[in-house]
Length: 252
Picture 1 (tube, rainbow, N blue to C red):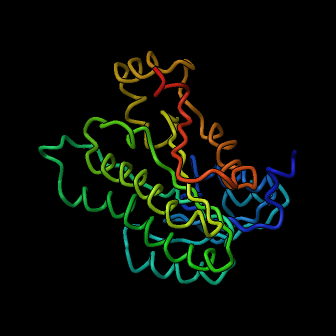
Picture 2 (cartoon, helix red, strand yellow; picture 1 turned 180 degrees about the vertical axis):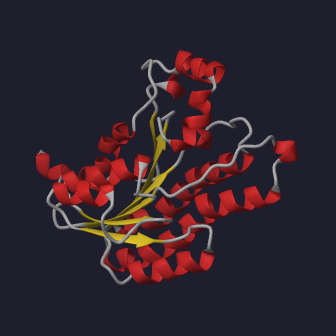
């Protein structure tokens, strides 16, 4: 049974790997046996904490810096990764900007949609082509509870994460028959930089906790099992899903 979840002999790309959810995903994939290419806007080639976690698990690590707000940089990254025999692509890089919709600056909208949606498609398109030729591959997007709900003061983020849910299904429809599984994970309220403002707001934090059946904020490590599952042979007949890891929030 354990072989179903083994990633030994595979190479995984994790974007947004330097910290938070991406860090936890990269570490979990390494523990399962994957070598890791970690990509973040400020990812050093060597000497990072995520590298230490990966090499500590006995796997190799390569760091690549890429600005996901720059389409040309994303295209260059995709062209490079397309030559690297990538088995698993985890599209986790993202950003969030908070402002009421009526006053939401358009430059913030454009940046959030570019980083969280457009760059995800561009990179996936490039990396998936050799996967489709080989007849195997795993692609995992980081969606959000706001792939299902509207949120407050984050119109660009909600639009992009709703788009990720649709993109997951669209790509799965085209690629499942070619051996490439496309799925997404929707984290709940996880204790990361993106939720710092919510956790610092006593009223909002209390309201959020009151709705979570698990009774706590999630930790980035709570995403580890879902990530390994969707990257492994155990999920070979799973395609086009958005898997919530939310402490029961959506079931409330």
